[in-house]
Image (tube, rainbow, N blue to C red):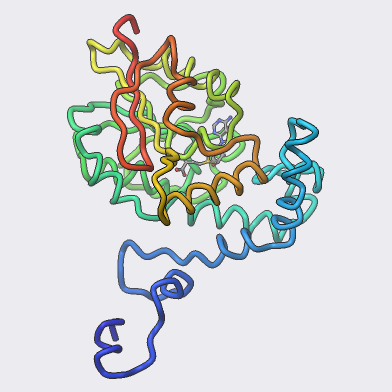
Length: 280
Ligand SMILES: C[S@@+](CC[C@H](N)C(=O)[O-])C[C@H]1O[C@@H](n2cnc3c(N)ncnc32)[C@H](O)[C@@H]1O
């Protein structure tokens, strides 16, 4: 029974937040966020977050999570410390990255119009829902998914020919395409690493005149007060605690792209588009 019908009949029903924590919701957008909530409330995360202030004072490079556990999130080093946590954190990553995909594709459809080929970076060698949804909405796009060589073949790949896979380290090579998509990639990384990746993007795409473009999908912190800002700041804390990255403001992203790129378009909060400069 739907929530509205249940309310009308005076029956108990799940509230909107609980809706995100159960299976069996007949809605193609629905994703069960159990693993995300359990990871973000685990003692491994909370204990690490308690070290964030010290980390700023000491100006340490490693994130508190690494300092405390001696292992890197999502990395095999964490698997050997705690295989159950590693599995749950990877499920949480998938849940987070695959939630609400139709929204940016709809809200920023202009960004994707006219694109012939895409390299989608840091795929998970499995479902790769964003890449597949992109091709579903824009069927003329030829999409290559770049997958970490360690990950390729670790998951069952859908044998539908919608996307093709290439194994490679994003720091060394990005398969050429008219557009490179960096969806939820830069927020894991230091500014220096982002600059290295953007340099690889520049090599992978044609000039601006020939339609070369890099699309960045990430939170863009906007300080207008409200629940969206709270969410962005909480995600900033999560990323500063667990990874070497953070959520960036528009100016921070512009800074990473300076010299090589000009900012082309921004949406209200969660996606930025950049394209190479006129000399690109
Ligand atoms: C960056 S996130 C995934 C974001 C992804 N674009 C998505 O929306 O699901 C984590 C993924 O990055 C991949 N990855 C990490 N380091 C990589 C590297 N150096 N080159 C290519 N892929 C990498 C990991 O294997 C993992 O699947």
